[in-house]
Length: 145
Ligand code: DQA
Picture 1 (cartoon, protein in one colour):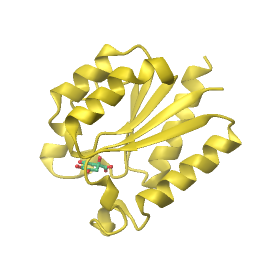
Picture 2 (tube, rainbow, N blue to C red):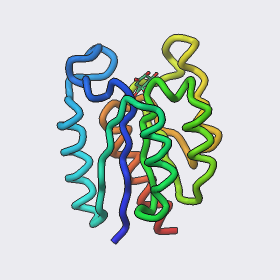
Picture 3 (tube, rainbow, N blue to C red):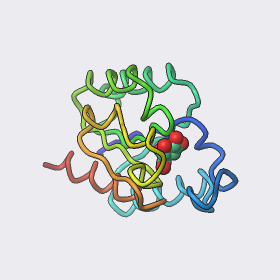
């Protein structure tokens, strides 16, 4: 069975309470439940990691090819700052789909640049919870190619 790792970066544990006008009313648990439901329908397995720590995310990406067929990642604020996460994504040979709840290109200028995007397989930004679901579908599609 195809196995996909979903990584949620910093502050996404606060979803639901955190700037709901931008990020929506769903908690991280709600989002994970929706991802799990879609994964079940598509007959793939998903694991989740939420971390506020750059190194922990780097470790998870680096060790993922042993356990997973693809990654869906919302690097959150690290999107815009982390060369280490970008390099980790570039170091592995499984597909990586970058997702964002908000459309980062419509927001503050510092969010317009993703360091991760050029190393990722592709990016989905601006569809709220559906960014994750579309990201999961993209990851499934690409692993079935
Ligand atoms: C985010 C966008 C980032 O700019 C921000 O730092 C986040 C969440 C999104 O999902 O829209 O924490 O990745």
